[in-house]
Amino acid sequence: METGLPVEQFDYDDEYLRNEGRRRADCERSNYFPLWKQLVNLIRSVGVPERPDVLEIGCGSGQLAQLLLREFDPEYVGVDRSSVAIRWAKELNPGDADRFVLGRVEDQKALLGRSWWAVIAMEALEHLVDDLSVLARLRRGTRVFFSVPTFTHPSHARYFTSEVETREYYERKLSIRYIEPVAVGRGLWLCAGATQ
Ligand SMILES: C[S@@+](CC[C@H](N)C(=O)[O-])C[C@H]1O[C@@H](n2cnc3c(N)ncnc32)[C@H](O)[C@@H]1O
Image 1 (cartoon, rainbow, N blue to C red):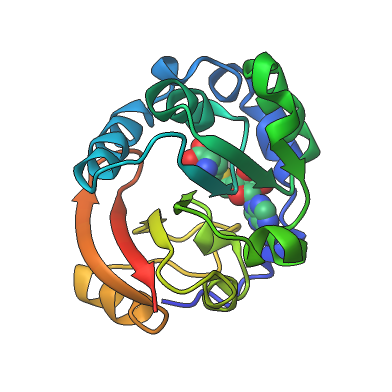
Image 2 (cartoon, rainbow, N blue to C red):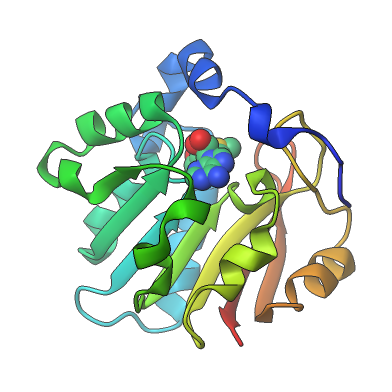
């Protein structure tokens, strides 16, 4: 469901600063850790090559990156528009600080046009005014692992109240092969697919 909210104006830096304790903690201490473990198992289930190229859209403060770097030793790049989040991501992953890019994903022409084994976007696509256009810029056959919310919020351009609604929306750009409801936070859909 499209919310019509002015999400481009949402102040992500302020949101991070107001939630510093949980946003700066190691990944295990986040209440999203069960979701990230489920994501790791889902990624593993498709058979991961050595040193996979992985792009994370909306990487936030680098908590999922910490887990992905540990589990898969990927050639990882994370992009996020919040300067506070990117600074904390670098601090949380000091050996991989140069992998975090500050900016709007829509402006990352080189990154979006590159070949990736997988693109990951957890609680991120709903913040983009036109997420389908971003997905359309990825190379054909790119695996996409993502989660989207079941609820509205001032930073959400859209949310999804059913599996059918989620599938119908994302099947405009992806071949969806997995959708599962996850009871983390206020509820979300964990999804996997590939660009067409
Ligand atoms: C709800 S947070 C999720 C962060 C992280 N993926 C997680 O699961 O903890 C959404 C993130 O998307 C980022 N974001 C929003 N719009 C963006 C855009 N246009 N380009 C890049 N990042 C964006 C925000 O700064 C924020 O870090």
